[in-house]
Image 1 (cartoon, rainbow, N blue to C red):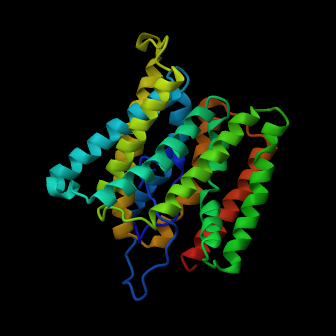
Image 2: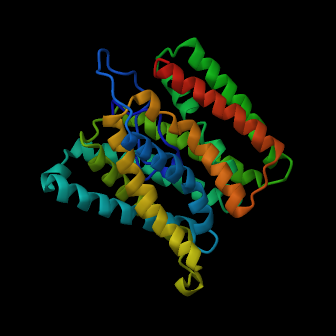
Image 3: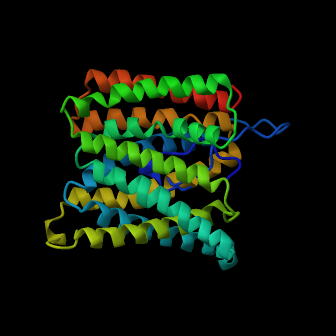
Length: 330
């Protein structure tokens, strides 16, 4: 679906399904493609992707302090999807939103996997686990995608599989806070499930007839996932006893930040980078985002930096770095 996209962002930034967010597994660069210059604008856009996507985990943690998880996530993605669709229609004309029935069905399915499953479970989990730990657990998405590709008959390089093994060791260390009772184990398991669903959505999207325009695809994915999120919220009874007057100002601000910056600004910067910068450079967000998330969680929310988080996180990031560098040819 997005042949030039690097490894997918995690469930938190799924606003870019592209995430939402980039939806395709890592792809090899086109042979003979001209070298792309690294300008000041490229570094500025990369900084936006690094910081904003890395901060979405912090934003989610603040949102769920006083807002119901699926209700807030559903509202976020419906709003972001409508804004993105309006932007596409304004910049490229209403015809840019036209898709075939098969493309629409594919986008809806991927949106459910990425946004309802991937992002939705992360939002629920962040009621119980620190945002930095959630980001590091989600960083394993490229590893799951490689394993899914392997089961489908693809044969990744040995070095890539080595990166997967390294990352899995890091994940084992990261689960220790849940096993020892430092955080709720159910929250850790929810994040791991979210990462698996996100990976499945990413893997599936590359094998389905997706809309050619990535912005159009993302808009439909966000609308599908957001609508499903509201349905789940109603089924869970999140509306009962919910009083908007009891929601803190910082939760409202965080929700607005996720919609405007996490979903639109960062995604636009990411899409521009795919056309303007070397893919090997763009791919670095996959292991920079979790580091940013951990630092912001510690600095702003005073989240503890325990040895399992530091050691396990470092191993996971190293594994992702090996995978991304191998897949991008260096």
